[in-house]
Image (cartoon, rainbow, N blue to C red; front, side, top):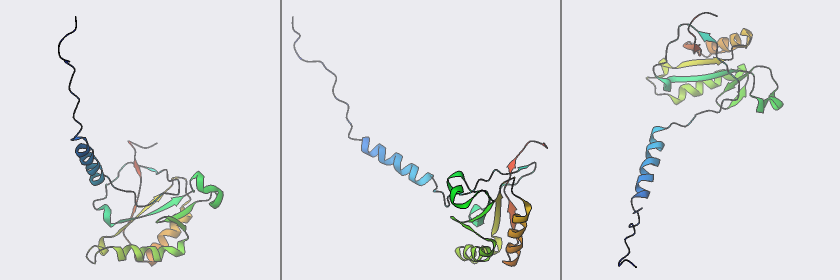
Length: 154
């Protein structure tokens, strides 16, 4: 009682599989952005009731102020630090930082450059004031403060 002919299913063709994988890979390469900087400070942003989104993020340079993350605390301690680009710096380095950030921009966009301060909510105002004074000396007068939006007052 044996049937004539083998009626098994034909194998699935995987010839187009590399093309599909390449298209997915290309999509993710184009649509994702790489992080410019590694944030080395804890910055729990303060709450704000009225916030505005920044229009052109390419014209914004960030200064992070806060205590170092746990992996950096053995080396730097727990006191609030200033992070410019990928390293901890002092307030005297802000002038050089602003100049280098201006040099990265087009001549027409330099007037619209904004410095955004991302300061931890528990950071004392003394270090923030020192940073603001140095920004004033560097003629970086457009400053914004990063905050998280809250629904009302605490």
